[in-house]
Image (cartoon, rainbow, N blue to C red; front, side, top):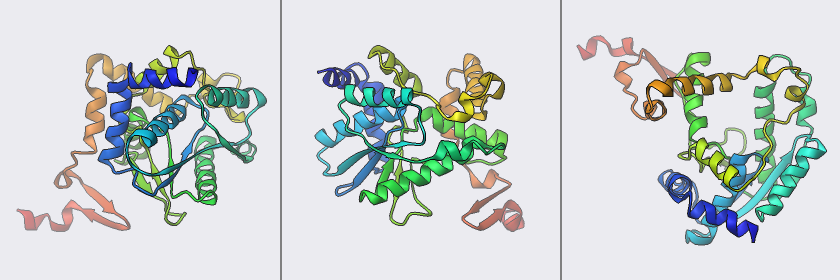
Length: 275
């Protein structure tokens, strides 16, 4: 019964902001095709849980024939966080296929960039688990705000223009794809949904952050960018949309250089020819 009420809230109260944007991303980028077997990766956070519910509903009403496995990696959660994940899955009517890794133990020894290493190890473990279960795609819960934050992070900290793609082929796992069906869904709408349904989800729960005396003194680059966007939005309410559209409106004639695969191009290559 509770599961029905939670799903009803998405279809009624958040149809325009969550459901319609979810289906827009799925269809515009052709994320789900007949015959797919998709591993929906449930981390225990709000984003992956609402992703799971949306895909569950889409499977029932879209008319597209595909299979779903709801997989959940335990990288070394403590008992309290694992209980939260299981309770939420029970409330939302999801059967989770949980598999264990020791990723949290592995990153404890990493001093320079533990979050990057954790992300890389988790992604590889998810691909491997999906392949073992006969899946050809993994679905992650990254949303609109993750996309625009990635754009700014690349520019500010990486010195490059790039974005988080809505879908991509795996370089290391043959015939596997990654899809991000929440691509157009804004995080504040997901937060409203969780609060309205009185749902409590875990956040980052690795040993590295939990052992820090003052996590605010070790704030992540992504959190810094979140705060920057929040400040910019006070003066320009459309700033998020503009950041998002910037990687859709790239004019190669006005770039110093760009590369496609291993081949690099520079505006000087044919500068005189364009005069």
